Amino acid sequence: MTAPVIAIDGPSGSGKSSTSRGVALRLGLRYVDTGAMYRAMTWWMLHQGIDPSDAATVAARCAEPVIDIDTDPADPRVRVDDQDVSAQIRGTEVGAAVSIVSSVPDVRQRLVTLQRDLVRDALESGIGVVVEGRDIGTVVLPDADLKVFLTADAEARARRRALEDAQRQGTGDAVDHAAVTQTEEHLRSRDALDTGRAVSPLRAADDAVHIDGTHLTLQQVVDAVVSALGSGGASAAESRR
Ligand code: DC
Image 1 (cartoon, protein in one colour):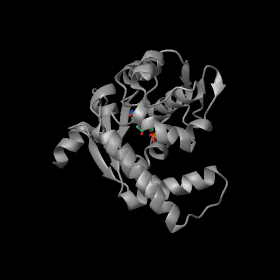
Image 2 (tube, helix red, strand yellow):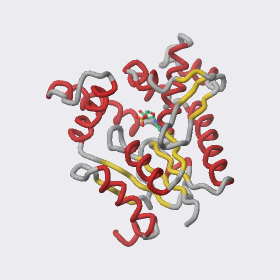
Image 3 (cartoon, helix red, strand yellow):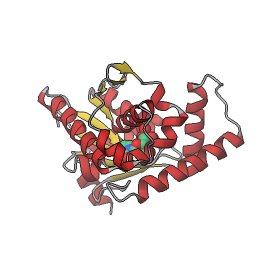
């Protein structure tokens, strides 16, 4: 498979981003972080003073921002109207509002079109792509060569996300029990919104390969994805049933 398309879906904190970037770097593929696009849209709404829970206004305005994401897995920067917002979109304000903004159908329609354009551009240059999100295997790229559904238990996901937040904020490489518990609560509520929404809920595609990363290192998860691609992806999942 010279230019494979790999879809990686799963809940928050399951290690999708590190895995997707690791696979893209290992195989020389492009990388599309669709969560970053929903975050960029949410950042813009907040920046405009739009109430993210005002679905009618969010829908009416969502075609306005120019959202541009780099597909280089080594440095996937995100720009909105030419402003680099790569750091801002990881803030707590955006994190708290992104699920509600991403549940608006017009937002999804616009971003899914952009996502498919990025994949088409990569394939036209003869380069494959790893796309990560919540609905990639089910809605955005149902014909992907490999669909992966990556999970990890809630505490492991919370510990990983709390550590990432602490490192980003420069508050150290260790997290205490309270920070993990609070992050776990945030993840659970975001998972509930992402799984329960009417449009494109978080769900594994029927032919996805399921990987539970709870007790695996990043390298082991990347190895598992690469070997699933080598063994035919969807058909490998089929034979596992
Ligand atoms: O992967 P992430 O945490 O950066 O995603 C942020 C939010 O965006 C997440 O709460 C759900 C939403 N999202 C989505 O609805 N569909 C996608 N394909 C990717 C993310």
